[in-house]
Length: 485
Ligand code: NAP
Image (cartoon, rainbow, N blue to C red; front, side, top):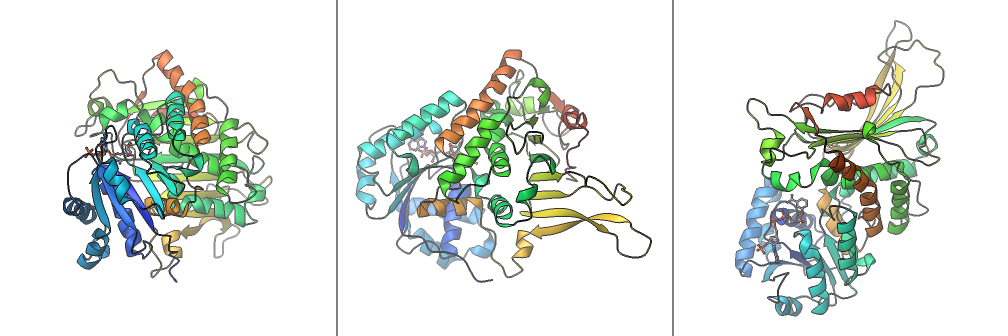
């Protein structure tokens, strides 16, 4: 397969939080992999910024360590790493003080794309944006990348939006949701909007329901303190699952322009029905003989925070009026799996005997593992013996589709960072979208707080509490089996 790596214009990427965990695990390795792919121009620069006092040499050592930990060995050789490191430098800058700003201003170039990546706590977003403006560092060519969480409710999200808007235009702000950088997510749009097959069927007439699952086998150990103030609803549903729901449910935008696409996502969020208590189940994982419970991980014996949530959502518009969307996400579940399952209806009338083996069509869109899609279709089982029907998948695992010599699927962060440099906001959340998602989420969380009820306990390594299964059973439906560990 011919490489499709398209060069980008040269840039200065100023990475605030360069000494932090996310920079080491995701951002620096992603930049390096783009460098290896030949996408990073020779004169592009990565300027690390944080309070820690260090020189370029010490920073390069830190970057080298991150690369040796988080980049596959096959992609690492000393010559390439040294060449990448030569494009990295460091300036000690305090987001809350005056230190380092003059040096930063002297170091960045005005004539190239300047991307300021805020990989720091959200409380620093406002102060950083303000100092970039007041020190005359931000200009028209500047872009601002901000990490999640973008607020913890509508009020805090509005405040963050206002703080950023005081120094940057919305067209310069890139709110990252790494789910949107997944190959599959873009393919969902490609499949929907460039094949005549799906769009005519993509509505309540032909689709029985949609399920969105984001399951993780890990618990919250290590970051239990943070997680306990958040929970699955804030940490996963308000952003990642909501984005997946929007991309599945939205109307075709008139063009593939970032704002036209984001307008359509926003309309979906605004059409979501409010959720009552009977349509939502919260869970907390129990202890096993060897692993602590959620309560122990969070070190909060009174915690009512959910490590699992499942819900049934209605969308009040013509396309989806009678097609429910079921969402579930949780920690310590069977395995790591993120997928969207579009369950089509049965044929109105069957001329064949239906048995368990022949089911209605299902389109499964897998985000992880093995990014890809498959469409289950019913065919006749080959061989003699009458018309026995069987469901087979039309499998499109992207890695296989690209072939053994094909390009590796880039990490979501690689794609998203390069989109920032290109100035393409399509895969980033707009401020009003984030606020609309909080406006829908807030009343649900407020109702939990008011009622003060405890989440249902569930077994580790399972697919969540029994009550979540019942949520679908009562509608005569069932969750897709998560399979083996
Ligand atoms: P972290 O490991 O705590 O790193 C925080 C960074 O901020 C450090 O580089 C720290 O460096 C810098 N910093 C702190 N105070 C500063 C100040 N006053 N001025 C300048 N720099 C300052 O955090 P992280 O895990 O990398 O997360 C960063 C952001 O990404 C957070 O918003 C987090 O929610 C988000 N995020 C993280 C992950 C993840 O997996 N880690 C995933 C998704 C989103 P100094 O101490 O040297 O100043």
